[in-house]
Length: 245
Length: 234
Image (tube, rainbow over all chains, first blue to last red; front, side, top):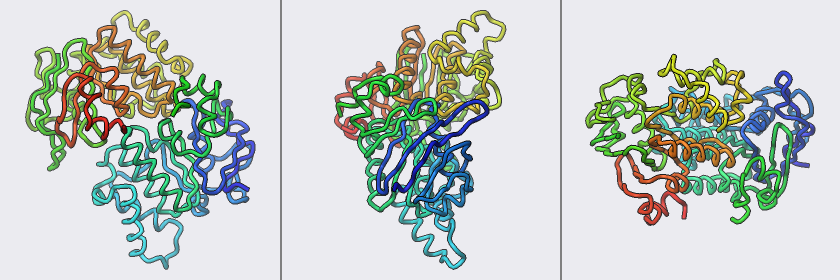
């Protein structure tokens, strides 16, 4: 049994099938990449898993239990946290308070504020934002806002972490340090599903890759298999150069 | 064509640009590279009049820009394609494009320009009647670039055009940028895909913490050990 599974997951927007009949199975401790052309339905699938959208058909299961159509906060409490492609932060709240809010999410009134604050400090260190902890979120550059979203998501103590294009806009060197961070998160026992166009990162960290195209699963396999897949090259990669890495 | 001289910029008490000087000659393609928060976007925002520098000058075709409002700077022929798009979400795709040609209102040729943009980004043509807010992240980026091209700018400032695009579309976008340059448009490019930016540009500037720490022809950058290690991940 996978920790996160989808069976014939389908979402229609009016007459448009944004996600159609998609099956997937993520095993505990895996890092799985979700790639595909812009508009393929990747973020929609994230929204279905995290409960931001309700499914039109099919079923999503977490630890064997159906979660499709639960509310986002219920899914978060069960252990699935996410970041957002277009960042969703509170502009006028400080960096450290964002992570603090994540830490107290789903906890009871008995949770000590000091504990949550200590946890926040550790996470800010992990994502490299300690020096900016007092800054308002709106004053961070985009790449740092994305790292803040990662810290906030981790603060909820997830078993599964969904990362939506957290490495967009980073330099090659910054991508390398982010991939190290993702490995660290996995070593801590968190399963990771990530949407990403940065192939340098995808090829380096993913155990498996799922490719979506027009809402349908086009391919699934090991990074090297995907990089050589003619259909994937045609609609997405544009070149077979990624197979050589 | 563009002459930036000893520009300094503050956000409140925090200085983000320190004596930045930069020139772009006609038909040249110049890249500004640097890590996040190094001041690249702030530099573009200052040139296009969205931010006011505390000292220094910006000249474009002999006109002083630093006290001119942004809309007049756009009329002089500078098109700024911002990071993240800045689209009109409740307007249709083709309406967003038409607004990009606003400064040429009433002129002929707009239709050809739209067709050219649709040729570069066919998926925009297929979504011409959709509201901008219903586009995916990558499609929004394409629309932002397309809108910036609609004014047929003399100087095109692109802030991370490859942001959030699939590898295939990144190639398409850079192909479009090259085509733009080959048509005689001068380009100032800010890009995190530093390797690709350096491959295309004639010259480059490296910003670190708001200072220009390296400038010169692209070969100088491609051979520089600091650039290789800190930016190209080699």
